[in-house]
Length: 289
Image 1 (cartoon, rainbow, N blue to C red):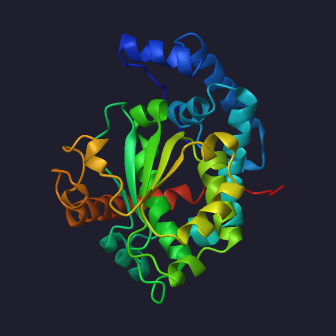
Image 2 (tube, rainbow, N blue to C red; image 1 turned 180 degrees about the vertical axis):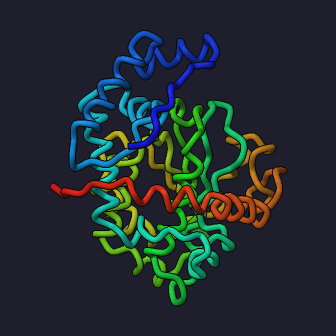
């Protein structure tokens, strides 16, 4: 178990009111629910997970402080890691195959939040070469960056994420890397495992044949997540019309650096946190049910 670190809420009165109304979180209920989940982790011999306040709080907020849903999400989080070592194990930032994907900028959380306090993530789904890069490595690199971006980001635990999937340049070879079992696991990670709520999934620069793939994605989604999927044909959505230009890279109509600069930033962050990724290997589910 990790060292217990007590959480102190330093959020504004307005944010606390929002949390009470939308997440069922108050200064009174927070420590009680955190302690309940911590006790459940401690008493569960099969689950080896951090027990610091903020780690637990991330899952509670993602589940609107429903204890049973929080337990289920935490269990699923580590169950998926046990079931998919090709995504979650040996996360060494210096592996050449991962270095290439970091350089390509396949998964790019923007460094500024949108007007709702949400993190915006640009997923460049076809930036890699299917003949050179395995989908398992593509997902490993992406999830490493996601884990790092979410680790200490309080606003995201409250307001969630908007994901923009840029499909420009996609080929049938890219599509063939996404069989139904991979899509099923991806959707499960989004809606059943990760401690964050997705408020919008915007597919941009799409092609006609992509609808076949999206229908497979939708088949594994809850009704709520399906309603948050939006598909935009090439040039039909200008991101700078819906997001502040000071947060978008130049390639997407913004003024906040370039995709290359953002890729270099996240590559540097992942490398600097190599020891943290290695430490996470000790947290796991030892009995898969």
